[in-house]
Length: 506
Image (tube, helix red, strand yellow):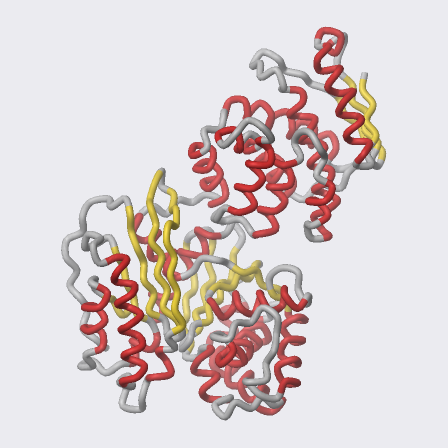
């Protein structure tokens, strides 16, 4: 292996940092600004280099692949060369781990990039991947399995919160598996079976260790897994993430194409096609060997882990909370008013949760977050501010949230006032539509009760439901003392009626 690089002294607390991942299939770079302990990605570059294809039997790189990789790093270097030393962290993974110690490629790569490059061990790679995934998904107390399929290696990690407990790096990836089993470009049932068996053999030494580790949730990262999830979604075979059934269907479809060149799948890029079958074989082997039935997909992985490592702030909290706090500050949300709305929304929810089938802990969280962010769009413009807030929530990179969670959050914020968002709620996954409809009603009522923005006003109405019929009762003569609220409730009853709800109040 190349000798370790001696890093210059780091400048204290850089406000802008970058991470570069020299993988066996593609090179990635992200540039991020650090503020309030939160990562804000401001630039992201990726090139499909396929470094692993150039690794020779003598453990050096073919001239063609080396030139391709250095040209990519020259382009990356244009973006980060002027950044202070210590603010850029670059790492090489499986292919660079296999180079001869005296191979000059790493030195040339450092000159092209303008910053040192560390060649990291497989388990260190696994630790950093887990760090990135843990920060990019909701970090609860459940134990999770993280799988990252690279070009030349596959990392398996089991951890809790931000702490990895088991780490393993296996010698198989989408490039190496494709070269070994589909080098002639033919896709047959026998070749696919051999590839999957080879993958199972790689996992076998750690199979029982990982099976007994007690993980409850599987999360996948890397371009390979994201590409597989994207194809499954585009084909309509899996609504979100990756299921074992959809993966088997994809495997059969690849065999039916008969050759790599003939693969024609929605959502699959031309760049990814040559190594796609190898990646599917690896993932199928992991699913079968470790007993994975369904896998979520993370947008964050090694490079994000590098950034969080540089930040030096590994906080044991739900990353979504940190994301929303940062968003509230950035958009100047009136947090005192938002907290009053959230308190009322949660009180109404508690009265309806059982009757309306909203007992899953996801729903009060989504309701609370929507209440906190319902005025997000006010900083952009007061007119139709609910639309501005919904657009931000739907389009922004919100660490920790799935795209469907963002869509629900956006729909709730859009629907907290004025027109009820029937069309937007119908675009959600089927399992979210009915809860979304009902959470939206709860949020609308909570917002309405605090329209006067008074900290002294503390309405405590009773709310009962029978299907989509709601009965709202206020104590004593509260409504008589708040005639504007009575008028707004009359208008709200009309809006809800158009959405299929009946609202009575007294």
